[in-house]
Image (tube, rainbow, N blue to C red; front, side, top):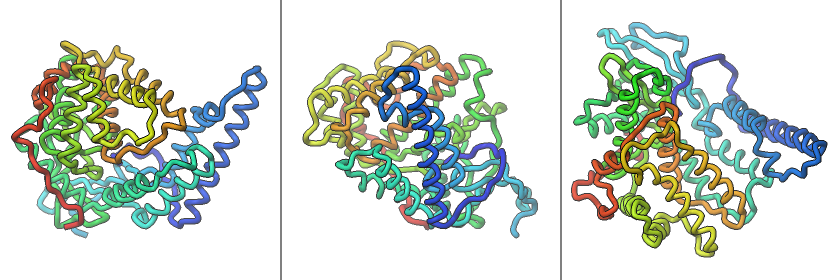
Length: 412
């Protein structure tokens, strides 16, 4: 739920039925696009499959536009000066700049009214839309994932909790001068308002103009941070949005923003991921399988071919870690290969299974860093980065100095 530049404002529907009506019009528009695309392909002598008609760029744009209008779970007097024109918009709020009476510049994130009340109904409405559309098989039990999604979104809508997570990261990274984390202004922060130190910088995805060495350094730092989050802190900021990172050119530091999606990870799951990655590095398929079972990736009746396909995707995802020297993300087609393998597996409805939410959130964070590395055409020695975190083909035991993470699960 990171910030994005404001382009235009629009009314946000608040009521359950008005929001459901938006989703209903979305379903109708998607269906219309499917009919038009089907007619076009039949006219060309083709026999399109249902999933090919559903997963088109036009439908993707329509879904994104409608969810942006909903701006919620479907997506995501004390000031000396206060800018009432928002400087940035997020999925559940918008950011304003201000200045306190003592001269300190602040950024204030203000939540859209009614967001917290709309979370449960939004998630239920989207699930209903997926069911009615036939996109999900009736046999797939998504209730645990929906319950976890609601919990995660309620956490993200609690700005006091986000502020506490932000301050914990500031403490955990006190030894890392390469990062800056805003300071929360606790006296101005509520469940719906987060006041913090204003830190200005450039959008990290725009840094392609920087020298190669600086781009490599920036991306290497972000991967080192992720490995520290996983294996040392066991506390991960799971939102992969590029807007969560800014670059302060004068100090060459990275600014870390938006901690609403912070999740604490059980030690057992962290150890299983350490084993999964280490076994992938030495091509130990039985070891990878054991770790994947421990994480919760395989249902009891999984077919052997499906099991091997999942392990193939894990091996692909670990490819940069197994590469000797600098891995060139800019010239690699790794993202395409992972996507294609995932699409093939996803079309097999006998396989569909909901892994633990912790695993899904971790994977999206790693995928986001891979995409950013490709955008910046970075070259990173991933073995060196991983080795600094105690991860190597022979290192499958927990680190002795792992940090046990504690942070509020409720507002302070």
